[in-house]
Length: 559
Image 1 (cartoon, helix red, strand yellow):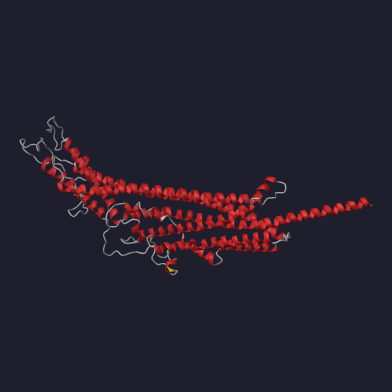
Image 2: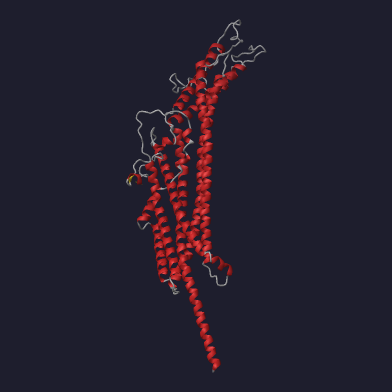
C-alpha cells in the first residue's frame, strides 16, 4: 500500500498547488480565470429583452448621418472557437453566434478543471481499489508526518467549505435581491409607459367629444384620431401583456437559480459534516462507526458533486459575462446614442413610425382644440349679436374674453404666448371673471360673456389640450430614445454595480466550495488510510505488549 499512499499524497499536493494557483494567479490556468473574472461583471441583458422591445409598435426609419456602433468592443475581445480561436471583434451582440461562443469559451478553464478532477480522481480511486483487492500482502506502515498533514488539511478544507458556502449563500441572497430590484424597475418603466400611452389615447378620444356651441373638431381629424388610438392601444396592451409574461418568467428563473444555489451550499456543507463524522475516532462510539462505513459512498458522491459544481461554476461565469457585457453596452450606448447598434435587438426605438405619428397628431389635436376655443370666443362670446339671432345671442356684455394661447406655430414648433392671451395655467382663473348669471332660458342676467355651461366646455377642452401638450415630451422621448437612455442610465448607475459584485460572489463562492470539497475528499482518502494503519499498529503494539506481559507472568509462575 506504499504505492497507494504515494499516489494519494501526490494528488493532494498537486491539488493544493492548484487551489493556491486558482487563488493567486500563478500559472496559465489561473491567468485565464483571472481574465474571465475581469471580463465577467454585470447585469442580465435578457432582463430588458422582449419587454423593452415593445415600448411602441412601428417600423424604424433610417436617419442620415447615423452609423452602426460596436458596443463593448474592448470588453468582448475574447477568443472565438468558431473562428479558429482568433479574437472576436464584433462587440456586444446577443444575436451573433460568434459573440455567444466567445462568451461561452470563458468557461473552458473551469470545465477543464472539472474534467481533470473527474478523470484524475476517478483513476486514483480505481488504482486504490485495484491495490486493495489485488495485492495479497498488505503494508500497514504509516508516516506520522503524513498523518498530521492530512489531519491538518482535513480541518483546513472543512473550514474552507464552510467559508465558501457562506460566501455562496450570501452572494445568492444579495444577487436575488439585486436582480429583483432591477426587474421591478424595468417592469415599472414599462407599466408607466403603457399607462401614459393609454392616457394619450384617452385624451385623443375625449377630444372627439368636445363641443363648443355645436362646433366640433373636423371629421378628418376625428378619423385620424381613430387610426392613431388603435395603434397606441395595441402597443400599450402588447407592452403590458409582454411585461407580465416576461416578469413571470424572470421570477421563475430567479427562484430556480436561488433554489439550486442554496441546494449546492447545503449539500456541500452536509457532505463536509458527514465526512468529519466518518473521520472521527470511532473506537468508543458504535454509532459513529456505523456512519464511517459510508465513507466510500460519500467519497464517490463528493467526487461527482465536485465535477458538477465546477461545471455549474463555468455556466454561471458565462451568465456573469453576458450580464457584464450588457451593462457596458448599455452604458456606451447611453454615452453615444445611435440609430443602428446591437441594442436594437432589445429596444428598436429610434424614429419609430407610430411614435412619430402619435406625436404629430397629439400636437395637431391640441392646436385644433385651442383653435376651436378661440373660434367660439371670437364668434360667440366676444360678439354682440342681435337678440333675434339664436343661439349666438344670450345677452353677453362687458369686457372681451381673452383668447387662449396656442403652444405651437403652424409648423408645430413651440411658440411663446403674448401678454393679451391666457395660457393653460391661468385660463381657469381668468375666464371665471367673465362668467355671467343665467336664467332658466340660458340668458345672461348679469354682466359677463361666458355662460357657466360654456365655461365648463371650454375648460374641458383646455384640460385635454394641456394634457396632450404635457405628454408631448414623453412622446418625443419615445421618438428620440431619450426615455430609453434615461432608463439605461439609471440601470447602469444604480443597479449594475450591485449586480456585478453579487454575481461575482456567487461564482467565486462556487469555485471556493468546489475546490475546498475537492481537496477535502483527497484529505479523507489519505487521512482514512493513515488512520486505519495507525489503529492497526496501535492494536499490534497492545497485542505485543500483552503477549510479552503474559509470557513474563508464565516465567515467574514457573520459577
